[in-house]
Structure formats: structure tokens, C-alpha cells
Image (cartoon, rainbow, N blue to C red; front, side, top):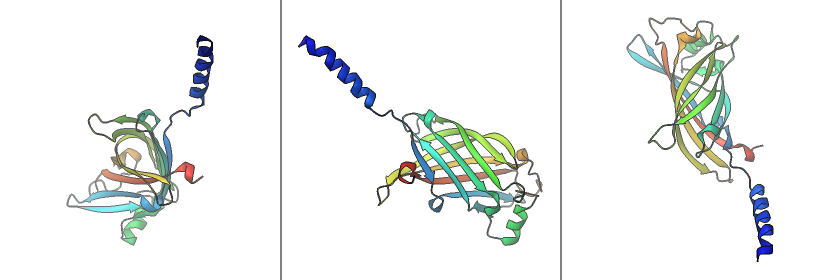
Length: 197
């Protein structure tokens, strides 16, 4: 029996080396089932809500190793929509997003920290770029769920909530009438990249 021991050990090592290393699943954001919404307080009296309708991005997620988690999103600033055409045109000009000159804003995560005692909840740090100014922000990320589409495609959803202080990025028009701190919700549903590439 002893003469087979080295062969058994070698076989075990080879088999282990052939196993794939665990890695984060990668997803492409599905814009048809994702949303970006925000609110602005007007005259300290009421909230006005809006959305961005054109964006793209991808993310990776590993429930066992948050160091592997990441997200990158790019948003078309001209796609801002508050359901009032004249107001949207104003938001696109140089008082606010200056969409002709700065057609995109973006967020790239730099770290994910699990929230203790809350499964699937993270504090996500990252770099937010608006009007070509980049500042660090922190978002709360919550795993909404994971499932498989009818065609067998793995899918999952995340929701991010954070606040952008617009004056930090040089957007300081009418601070006396419009809130400086803008709450944002980014709800993304992702399709596993391996199935779409």
C-alpha cells in the first residue's frame, strides 16, 4: 500500500490545481430594468423628483469576499428628466449639468465594507465625477436579490443610496432656493456577463 501513497498524493495535488479559483461573478447593467432617481428640495417647501434615463455600467459581486466587489457606472447628463421640458432644458445648460460640454458623469467604487449584522449590506466608497470634478463619496449598497431568467441567464440586483453635494462640484446655481445636498438612488439589475458576451 505504501508504494501507492506518493502516486495518491501527486494525483490529489494535480486534481486540486485543476479546480477553478473562486472569483466574483461579473454582471452588465440592464438599463431596461434599472433606475437612477434623485430629489431636490425647492424653496425649503417641497421636493421635486427626477431621473436619468440613459446610462451604462457593470459590476462584480462575491458574497464571500467583498474585496472582489466593484461597480462602475457612466450616466448621460443630457438624459435628465424631471417631467417638465423647460426645467429639463435649464438643467442641461451651464447653470447645472452643462451637458454639451460635460456629457457624462460617473462613479467608480474603490472599496466595499460589509455592514456588521446586516446581511448583503455594504458601505461602498468610490470616486464620483461631475463637471470633470472628481470627489470621494460613500454609498450604502443593498443586495436586492439573485435569480435566473427564463432563458437560464443568471441575474442579480443591487440598490445604492448616497448624497451628492452639488456645490462640491462647482454646481452652485441658486443655492438659496434649491438644495445643495441631493439624495440619489441607483437601482441596478445585472445580467451575468458570461451569458451575454
